[in-house]
Image (tube, rainbow, N blue to C red; front, side):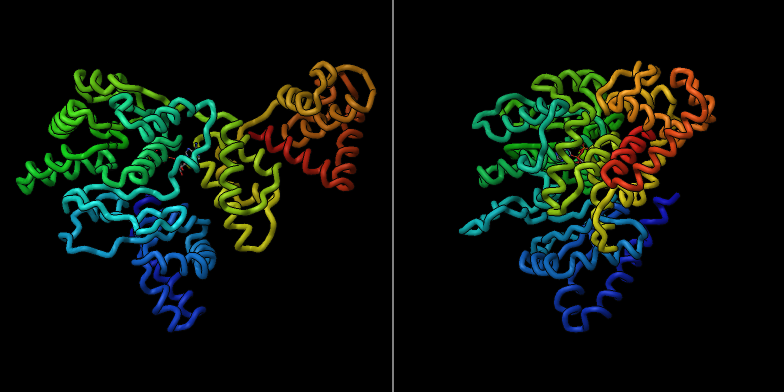
Length: 472
Ligand code: ADP
Ligand code: MG
């Protein structure tokens, strides 16, 4: 319901942002730089806008992006990452027929290159049709920006092989894994790499949905011949999210033929899906088996280490100082997928920029309240004892023991304090769980920890971190 309301109002929200900017920067600057901006796509976490030239993009990004981001936050109430891309000067293409297909702009985006290449990269002459068919590549989805860890090392290595090898190493490369784990990123990275090393090669990347859509359209306009030709003359074909082809017989048939023709000619095919070939639903058996002929590489759910690495790398890219504690906290808490992890980071950075405060555990928790709350669950005293013991490197049994050495007594007090705050247990109940101690001992522990917290910032943050990890 929220979904269908957000989208139609999006343009209006953008118009309001523009109007406010106009008032701020004056008419001349508005007409030169802001009016030409067009809204391409967006949702609550990501807004993409286009300008006609690279020069304009650099100028707008350098001078207005922060302000746009801030106003956007005020308008939609949550921090969206704003991206400004360059749209190649429009050529006389037929009116886009894809406007109804979600948010994919039917244009070829210029790819940002690291250093200015001279002479300017030559647009490889491609049939008009192919230009219309390909989907834009995200300039951020490069191998350099891809953090490798245990869960994705196989997929990464396979993608690199495909991108770097002179001869087709395996065909197809089939990448699969859950949502937001980096499949699209790897495919775009392959495309960037090949286009850079071999500008003469025809590399096509598109979603299975778009493939389907183009095919149906070709059928409607009785133009299937040229549709087939476009695909069959490519060097590298990449089709993303192929699970969407399930159940569509005609498209599947066409896809199968295209696929076979390319593989027979030794052209590289790269496929992604959310499931392994054999688990794809509504896909014919011969197709399933054919898809599994090359290399099948799965991307596993993230680990804590990978999430940490990704957060560190993104923080560096964003060029903001984020306390290590916040990074660790996010890596512990946002375990669903990398897209959500990135979204969380962008949100806290945008918020800090906007209100001009530094990022702390406190603000992080505030800003991500909804996200974190959805993960909340009740914690038990046993879990608290275990976590605290781990944290301070003592034995869980020390939580019950009568040892009074500071090294165990202090963590024990902290565990009592956390039990008081994170559970609904009474003081006597808590005392019993800590080796049958009296409720006054628990009360004393709670007071002691509160006192330490108010005198020692580092101690206080440590406790905060522990308690937030436990609330997970
Ligand atoms: P999928 O296609 O599997 O749903 P995406 O490739 O769209 O996932 O990835 C979601 C987001 O997470 C993207 O912004 C992508 O750049 C980022 N991402 C995924 N994996 C990594 C990684 N290993 N290193 C850095 N960023 C990553
Ligand atoms: Mg994807």
